[in-house]
Image 1: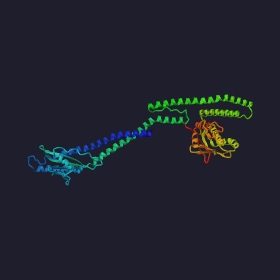
Image 2: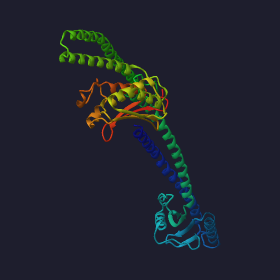
Image 3: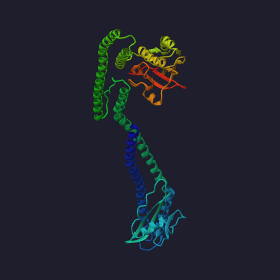
Image 4: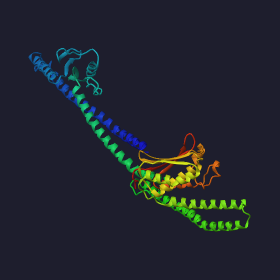
Length: 468
C-alpha cells in the first residue's frame, strides 16, 4: 500500500511545485526583459531629444550649431556603443542615417529592426519585443520617433544584445530550481512521514494478524498513532481477537473435559466387557471385536486430551542440542523397530536450536512411531539432523508405501488416515499433535515423497532466539 500511496503524494506535491515554479520562472524572465526594455526606452528618448533640433539653429538658419549638435549626437551614440555594445542610430524617414554607431551599421531592408523603424514612423514607440528565453540568441529592438512640430522627422533605433539579460534570467531560474528541489526534498520527507504515520497502524495490524494466524493467539495490536479511524479499527481488532481466543479456549476446554470425563465410563465399560467375555466361549470373535474397538476408542480419547493440552500449553523454549535429543529418541525406539524387523538408524551430529525439549521429543516420537509403523520388514528408517541457515532440521525418512499427491495435501489433518492404511492401529491424531507441539515453539513439520518409495518428514525448529 505504501508503494501506491507514496508515489501519489509525491506526484501531487510535484504538480503543486511545478504549478508555482513555472509561472514564477516565466515572470522572472519577463521582469528581466522589461527592465532592459525600459532602459532602452529611456536611452532612445534621450537620443530623440538630442536629435530633435539637430537641423535647427537659434536664428533659424543652418550652420555651426547644426554641425555642433550633430557632432554631439554622434559622439553620444559612439560612446553608448563603446560602453554598452548596443548598436544605435538616428534615421530620417527615408531611412538615411543622421548618425549611427558603429560606423558600419545601417538600417536593414527587412527584419525586426526595419519593422520597429516602420512602426515608429507612425508617431508611436515600437511594441515591446517578443520574450527572449535563455536558449534564444536574439536581440532586443526598441524604436522611438523624433517629433518636431507634431511631425515625425526621424526615428531612433537601438539593437541590444541579450547575453547578459539571458544570463541573469538563467541564474534566476537556477535559484528557483534549487528552491524547487529543496522544496521537493521537504515534500518527499513530509510524504514519507505522512505515509508512515498513516500506515504504521496498518503494518502493526498486519503483523498481529500474521501472529494470530500462525498460532500466537495472545498477540494484540499495541496502541499506536495514526488516523482516528485506524485507531478505532485496532481497538475493534483486539476485541475480535479476544472473542476468538475465548471461543477457542472454550472449545479446547470442552474437548479436554469431554475426553477426560469419557475415560472413566469407557474404562468401566471395557471392564464389564472383559468380565462378560469369561461367560462366553473362548475365541468368540464378536467379543474380541468389541474389545478392540473399545481400546481404540480409549486411544482416541487419550489422543484428544493430548491434542487439547498441546494446543493450550505454552512452549518452554531454551537452547537445545537437537542432535543429542534426536539420538535419544532413536535409541528409545530402536527396540520397537527391531521387534518389527525394521532397521532404525540415525545420523545426529551436535546441533543447537531454540526448542521445547519435551514438546520436540513428543513430536519426534509421533513421527518415528509413524515411520516404523508403516515401514515393511527388512526396510530402513533413517533419522538425520542438519542445520540450514536459520533453522535446524530433523529429517525422518522411511521406505514404506508413501502417499499420493492428494494424500500429501491432507496428511496431518485431525482424524485423517489414508484409505489404504485403515487396518493399521492409530487414531489419526498423532501428526496433528506433533504439528501443534512444534507450532507453539515456532517450529514446523513438512511432508514429501522419499524416492524411490516412502515418506520424508522434515521437522524444523529456529536457531535464533524467539522475538517478543
